[in-house]
Length: 251
Image (tube, rainbow, N blue to C red; front, side):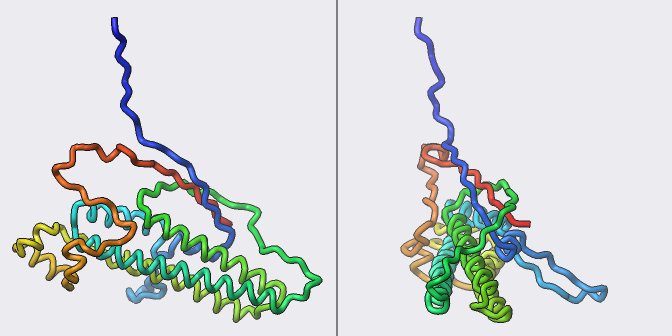
């Protein structure tokens, strides 16, 4: 008698801890709600939160997987922003590190400040560009720690420190801007190829026409997902990795 065993593999899983040390980074994590006065006028503008940004990225990726050229365009523009801003943020940190070496006497040995009371957020990230966004936030957190230490030991005035922090935070808000403007086009490249009514309506709704290289799929984001074709028989679960991220936030 032969015993049959269920040998179907489930998804891979991994748990990652993401630590934030500064209130400046955690404010960007949490975002900010829109505030209006009694007259309905905007008093404080809203800022997208990291969890909401990751959710939008997931929606855009799903649309790109279905061969939506507009979703691909959003991913391409977001990738260009986030990778470019990561370099800018890292350059700012290196400039601050150089300030340390120029201004601090050799008698001092100084370590950057670190938070002693992190708080955990459990989230799920299923897009590679979502990780790049988290890396950008981590870069900002590193910059903020360096700037706050520099201000504490009198290398920067409080006003100068604020300017540095605002310059870094602005890069993340600019990356958010690409995602906040996202709208689902509801088309595929086949619609564009046929130049049908669905495609014409999408162009009107989106208010811009895609460049030929994006429309054809020749140019896509480096971290763009594989486009699913109806002929593919394999399940999406094969080879996938399910990752749980826990972010440590300061009070």
